[in-house]
Length: 141
Image 1 (cartoon, rainbow, N blue to C red):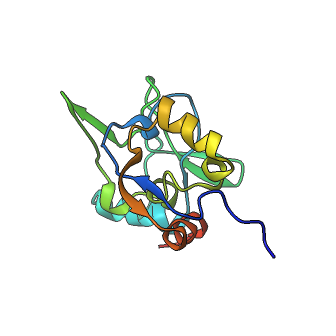
Image 2 (tube, helix red, strand yellow):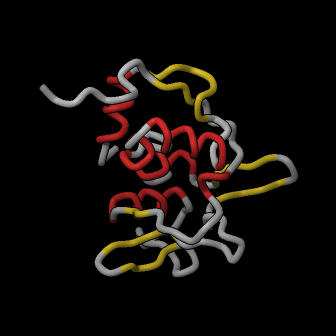
């Protein structure tokens, strides 16, 4: 029998739109060619691609770029309001936060993130085990 997951009874999460998951230390927001095309179309580009200010190549993959302050290039801040300028077409990596495998490795990992990065973790609606696993394993829209 497979090892029982520590989050078998579900987890609470409700996005507070703080923007913390879209800023901070340098990193990668991976985007597939299909996601790049969707973002490009959403931005009204005719070529199905993104400008260098929005996209960088990392080996054989592509990642959204970051501003000098660590914010994702598509993160918007207007006073107290924080948002994503491409929210309807954001990459899968963004869509599945915080139910990433590395965040679910242990209760300690989850709780540390909830205390240091994401105020929406352990708050709001409860997501059941099946929802969490479907989200965690999701790779395409």
